[in-house]
Image (cartoon, rainbow, N blue to C red; front, side, top):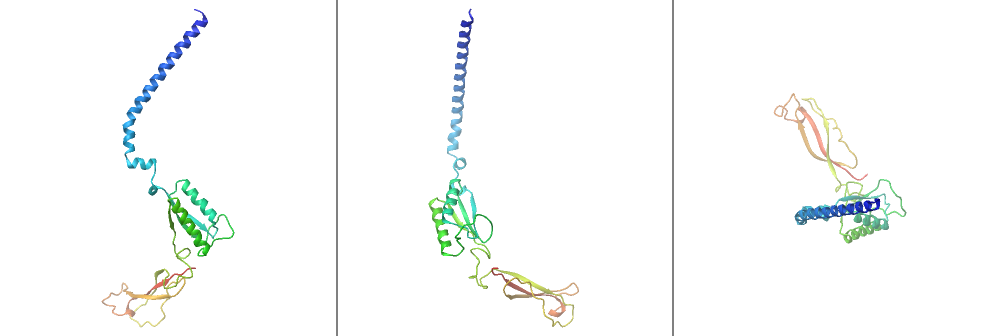
Length: 224
């Protein structure tokens, strides 16, 4: 047998082996697909599994969206919201703050101005257009809930007090210690007394014979 004939026979044998291998692989793939078909059908009917394939809007993340020191433009607002929609964010919470760093723009859109309200409306319209959830941040003293228009009567309050120790029996005529204060006046809330270890409520019928906890008062907090 010549070398040429041997080469031809080897080529034919290799081709036959490759054809048989391809046929076996195709049959194996077909068998696997047939076995997987029921599982795929079950997954297609499973709401939880489909939620991972195509997450609903309720499952999409939300983000804080800061407007810092009035450095806002409506074109920038549009670009931000378009980007959030494109990457799969489901909504945002607008946070206007008079602090922070970042890009500086001129003219600024400062909180409470006519331009600011227009920018907020523009944001809401875009959110509605893209089917996104929008909320707005309200916090104490320095954002939407604070400002010079908030009177002391409407401002936040907290309970504060001072303590004065008196050894009795004696008559107390001195001035009580003032409670801690930040801004604004205080008003009386309640007066309370507590007995010392040496006395009890039965043996201390009057204020001057017991340890006094004086003047629990409301402290009015106003915007700095």
